[in-house]
Image (cartoon, rainbow, N blue to C red):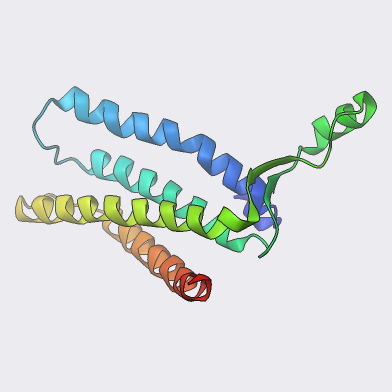
Length: 162
């Protein structure tokens, strides 16, 4: 996304965190619409993957923030001028204190990893039912690699903290 690309990782964290409830609701609504039975559709799998990706993106953006600094969401340029005129704080909003950054990243990573296990289980059931996953299989593979990268980044930070 544009925030990460521009190095505005605090804004990226904010955007991804705002997306989480929508992703969670989409998955929940699909599950409720199908009833208690287990769903075996590629669209359901995609919805779950998008949710897991969002958790992973939050963790990744948190890890990309500068060590020792708070994770801050700064105002966008349009509102910044209005804020300066009105005398509002233009420094931005602290989303995560510097001391909690790794814990928050680890929490989102762990959630993504747990939910990925559900996806892999569902993929297995779909493969057994001979349901073609199409490109979703490749997208899930990319997600796995993304989580591996996040885990590799987190591990030395966790040991350093201990």
